[in-house]
Structure formats: C-alpha cells, structure tokens
Length: 509
Ligand code: MSP
Image (cartoon, rainbow, N blue to C red; front, top):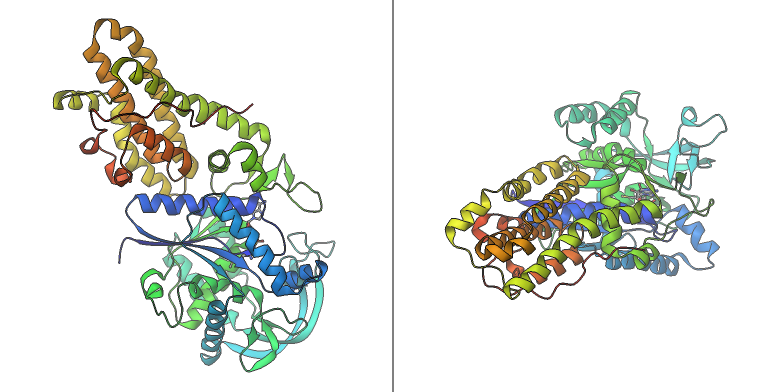
C-alpha cells in the first residue's frame, strides 16, 4: 500500500512534567502527519509515554508514590499536552499497558530463540538520567557521561544482546539506504560510531524491579530502552496483529527523535529488528535542541519552559508557529519571548491576519460580503497574474521542501505569498479602483480571496485552529480543504457569503 504513512514521536519519560522540548518533537511530528493527511495519505501518528526503568522508579519514590500511581499521574500530564497543543495523534501508547508488555515479552522471546540473547554479567558504567550504559573510554575527564550526566558503577548478572554481530549488516544497511538517518550530518556521526566497533549490549537489570520481567527469569527486568523502542510496533498490535495495523503500517515511514536519542534509534533499534527478522523503519529524523535565552534548559538551572503556560499566554497556534518557523529542523534553536512575539506580530499578525482583515472588509464594503462573480475568462486572467501563478505552484514546491524536512521554509513560502498579496492590494488600491471600474475591483478582490484560500489551506498543518477559522470565514466547505483542492478548478465559489471579518492573529502586546 503506497499512500500509507506511519510517523512516531519518541515516547516521553514520565519522571518529569512536559516542557518545551517535548512539545517541539511532538509538534514537528504533528505538522508532518497533518501535511501528509492533507496530501491524501492514510496516516498513523503515534505518541505516548515511556514509564519503566530506574529513573522513573526513583522519581516515584521521591514523590512518595508507588510507581504505577506515579506514572498514571505523569502520563496524564503528557496526554493533556497532546490535547492542549492540538496534536492529531491516532494513538497514545503507555509502556505500562498490557498490550505493550505482552508485545515486549514476545519480541524478547524472538530475540532469545534466534540466539541473539545470552546470559552474562555486566561490569561497567550506567547513567540513570540517560538510562544508558557507557564505556570507560566515553567518559569525560571529570568522570561524567558524554551528556554531562552522572554515572554509577554497575556490577550485576545481565542478559546481553549480541549487538556486535550486527555491525557489518548495519553499515551495509546505512550504505544501501542513504536517507535512513537524516539530516546528513547526523548520519555520518552514527556511521563513525558503528565503525569504531560495537560491543554487546546489556539488556536486563537485576538491581531494581520497575520494568517488564524477563520471560522465565523474573529476577531480571528488561532494559528500558529495549522495552521502549518496541512501542513502535506494540501500538500496531505486534505480533498478533488482530486488526491488521501492523501489516498495514509497519515499517514506519519516520521516527522523529531528538539528537540525544539518535544512537538508540539508528543503531540499537535496527539491530533489534534485524535480529528479530522484522523490517526496518524507513527513516530516523533527528532534530536539534532548544535553549532558553541562550542557556541549556534544565531543572537544576530552573529555566524549564512550560508549553501549556506559553500557550495560555500567547495562543496554541502562535506557539506551534514559532517553534516550527524559528529553526531549521536538525539545527538547535533559542527560545526567548521577544523572538516569539516578534515572529507572531511581524508575520502572522501583520502579513496574514492583516491581509484577511483588509480583504474581507473591502468585500463587505463594496460587494455585500459575497465572493465576486467572475466569468471563465476572468478566471483565466486571474490565474495568469504573478500572484496566483506563485500560489498555484506552491503546493508542489512545499511538498518538496517538506520531503527534505525544510519545515521552516514551507512557512517561509506561505509568508512570501502573503507579502505579495499585501503588495498587490496596495498597488491595485481597490478603494480607489471602485470609483472608476467595479468590474476590475471585483477581479482584484477575487484574486485576493483566492490567494487567501491557498494561504489558509496551506497553513492547516501548522496553525490548525486559526486556519480553520480563516477557511470558515472564506466559506470554504470542509470537504474541500485538502491539498488536492489547491488549483483553479476548485477556486473560491462566486456568490458565496463571507462571514464578518474577525482578527485571526491578533497582535501581541
Ligand atoms: N523516553 C525516551 C525516548 C524513548 S523513544 C523509544 C526519552 N524521553 S525524553 O522525555 O527524555 O525525551 C523525549 C524527546 O524530547 C527527545 O526527542 C528529546 O530530544 C526531546 N527533548 C528534550 N529536551 C529538549 C530540548 N531542550 N529541545 C528539544 N528537544 C528536547 O528520551
């Protein structure tokens, strides 16, 4: 099936409340999911929470709660994030759910049966914050993990996954699939790491109990990353696949991840899947990190940004827009309230909001709030104007930009179109034209309304609520809002009524 698209976010650790970094990963995936749906794909979009492991167990103890009650609470705060930020996920997987746990046990068994898991002893470093094992050679001069996290010495019986034996096949896979790890700079990092030599991976722990028990050896809990990665298939019903989702959607088209967790997705996950004899995802898309006014975001610094508060203050669409517009996917970005306000005011308010407001006011004033009647010759004429030529080719160029993850440039295109429309309105000055040529005035207003139809349809993945209000104001039927309608055959209908103008993107401050 060709037009299916399966996209995932990482599942979020529930040791903490959601912050702007979580919101960013999720919104990026949501924008891509919505864009694909509007392009005619059948999309499955998954997110959820990662609830096992030592880090969560410790946080629960600190909160004075048993781990299950603790994770029920914190998972709910991520669920709420999805609702508030208008995330269009089709499912929300929790690793403490029985559907997930069953799936993990069966996956484990498959690795075991295929000779990829053996019992040994782990003697080495572990970082609870990263939930990762580190080699001595990876530690910093201060004896920390490369991420700056504390490490502790662990010595305990452990099952191992025979990662080393998959090294050559992984390298061959990266070679044969140049688009597997994106962007390119990150791909090279991964390849170099694999080339430097892979050691077998400890995949069970015995010194704590909050996790999925190893089948037939209940002293061990399954390593939280093996447990967590399986969410991408457990949510599809692997292995029973009673409703055919696994068959339909696996392999995933895109796993969206932050750069910090690329190793787990681009090395461990493909190796687990190869060992289990399952297909590999088509791409791992790694994004950069946000700082807060130039500083690393961390609880200890106390500069964590709450996406819910931010949305309360500035609006959900405004926050979504800012996060997608401000940085190139893959690069790091800096949050500051000034940057956000500036983007919202100079682009959403001054360019798009203003264009809608001006056009709509003129249409109400001069032609009774109805889309002007134009004949087929005038429609041709309109579509030969630079502004509509630009609009008409935009869906195609945006699809290309989106495929190369240039999400911010899709928005840039939309802004350029609205700039051009504002220039067009100034040049044509319909408020003067109406005194001498009502026919030409109608054509100008038609062109502006048609351009706004393009802008609103193309904005839907980014600012769904505001785009919906714009489309309602323009009287575009809800059945005609996907990208297939972005051409002159579905031009805005002459004679249809516009709703009274309201400000979709009010200025902040
Ligand atoms: N539980 C693991 C993922 C398991 S996926 C099988 C995990 N969770 S996390 O909650 O710590 O992080 C989730 C995502 O948030 C990661 O993609 C991470 O990169 C992202 N971010 C966390 N802080 C961030 C910023 N400051 N900026 C951007 N994204 C950041 O890792």
